[in-house]
Amino acid sequence: MRPIFFLLVCLLHAGFAHANDAPAKPTKAAAKEETVIEPPPKDEAKPAKKESKASKAAAAEAARLKEEQAADELAVKIAERIAALKQKEEAAAKANARTAPRYAPPIRRPDSNVGAPAKPKADEKGAEAKSTHSTLHWSYEGESGPLSWGKLNPAYAKCDTGERQSPIDIRDGIKVELDPLNFEYKELPFSVIDNGHTIQVNVADGNFINVSGRTYALVQFHFHKPAEERVNGKGFEMVVHLVHKDADGKIAVVAVLIERGKAQGVIQKVWNNLPLEKNVSVSALSNIDLNNLLPAGRDYFTYIGSLTTPPCSEGVLWLVMKEPIEASPEQLAIFARLYPMNARPLQKPSGRLIKESN
Ligand SMILES: [Zn+2]
Image (cartoon, rainbow, N blue to C red; front, top):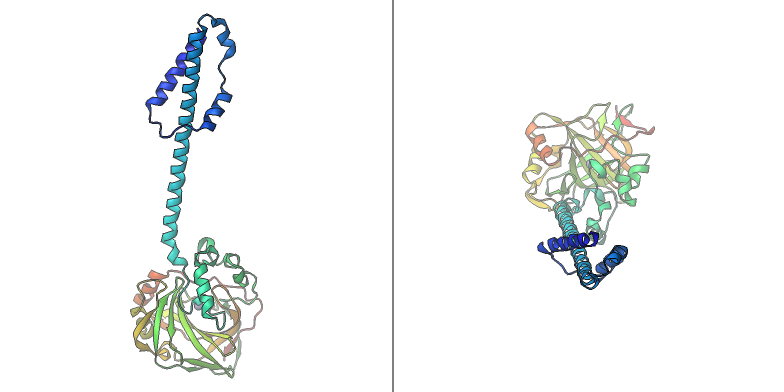
């Protein structure tokens, strides 16, 4: 008989469900829903009137068990879903904790701040506070790489829309008698910081350059691998950028190209003082004399460009030394371990005038 068969199935089913662990009590709402969806089969119950009272009680019991079972199943599903979500959250939190230090801005004179003249300390604090925000993160590859810099933060818009960006392939320069580039560098204390984008050296105040009647004070210097700029299409192993600022906040960057060759004393001194941690400035015990980082020849190329890192501020006077200096393969390898590639791709020259020493 069909009703009896139905009952048996229900009872068996319910019994099976309750033999398993039921971790949570059924919710009233879930039970209600189940009642509405599956009413007892009235039509099929009609021919079995004689056995009515007993079977009615059994049917009610079966329905109740079925409701309980459905609610239990729902509770299991909810518990599983909550556990899965919790796991996902924990994994995300772990990933964040791993990557967070990379996004932290440099503590002092960050590479990306040289474009903002006379930045007050309060702003630096603000930037630090915002460091967890993804828009401040930029890198040299992937989603936050150079092609995306302009979209990462409204303040970086120039990286996309600028018409006088750096670096460029320096070619077709006009050979003229350029004003001499005078270096007034002396031995001074220094500190080294790994700011997450490069190794940067902050030197005590007292170093200057003079060019075209203007005096610029050295702010910091840092390295790129490979060299960002090219000369007539030729690339170089590395480059050091000496970033200067004048009293009006105008920036002049001296680029010294680095070729593979003999060991370089100043570079070795910087490497000797490499910090063990990112974004922690390490003060060296000895002084540094940047005259020893310059090539003997003082001929140079010059053009107007930008910072090569966000915010890609324009109006930067570039002074690229024609004669490269040398660094040993070991010295190049040390930087490559930290930054195998931290060079912005070449930018459009856009008809800019380039002048070079005759
Ligand atoms: Zn640079």
